[in-house]
Length: 225
Image (tube, rainbow, N blue to C red):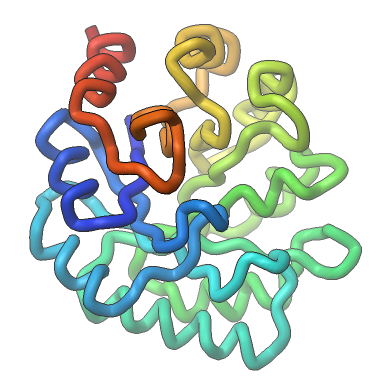
């Protein structure tokens, strides 16, 4: 299962045309991805037939949210649901960089009927494997997007493998640093079921550039033969 980030309608169309299995739709890719606009969500969902998961992230300051921000995120989740999104991508921490289960439960309630990905907020934890154990208690969570914690993804393969082992019903979606140089190694060493690519398929590997169709073709030739 290969998921790719789209930030525009054109991105989404290219991803589908060249074999992408699922889209994570974001705005402000240079900020790590923020909640996209109503119009962008609507048009992307209308333009492709593959699943579209929408990030719900109101700001890039941190993954710590106050009650007003959680209410805003709940409204954005409802908007994505009404527009026909396959799922949402969420994550909540407290000021001690632990998973904030109270806020998470509020967002999960709003997400009923949708797929849920807990995003790379988990990589802020001192022990992401312990974080997986906590999240695996929530049947509403379908997957966790992770690079295995802090530092370089290629150096975190042992942690990622342990996360896969402890994930229970949750799928581990490996991303945040995957590229043409390390993808084969990471896939072999982690045996994770899903993989996530962002800037690796963009011109100059930049969040400010478009997706390259040539790089998409190269990626799927590498991964799927």
